[in-house]
Length: 142
Image 1: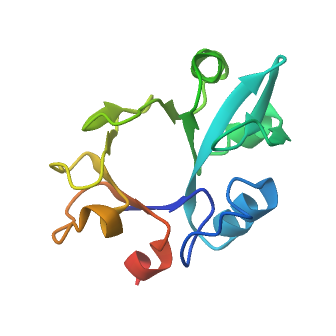
Image 2 (image 1 turned 180 degrees about the vertical axis):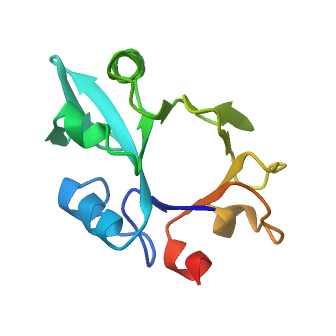
Image 3 (image 1 turned 30 degrees about the vertical axis):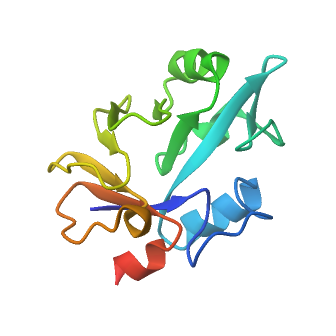
């Protein structure tokens, strides 16, 4: 089972810290994978949900514990070029990650190959899948 911190959050949303490289590294050091928001601007990768905030190197994105959510088409194209683990979605029921996992919108049908995204929003009761991505991931890893 993958336990994936949503934007670096472990114990709930923290808008001031989300997607900061230090915050993400702390989640990884605590044993979690991390979903991050990736943008591509001026030939550089950046992290940030609504806009490009934190410049990062390709090596940061290639960490095996990182799941890259491409936030623009340039990010999608360039994440593929460097062979990062990535996906693109907006409000799709499910999208396929570059490593073959089903990134599943809150409350939608889960399979053994699914990543259950924000089960606290979808009120998922039975979570029998490949992984969980949550702002409260510490609660699920117990």
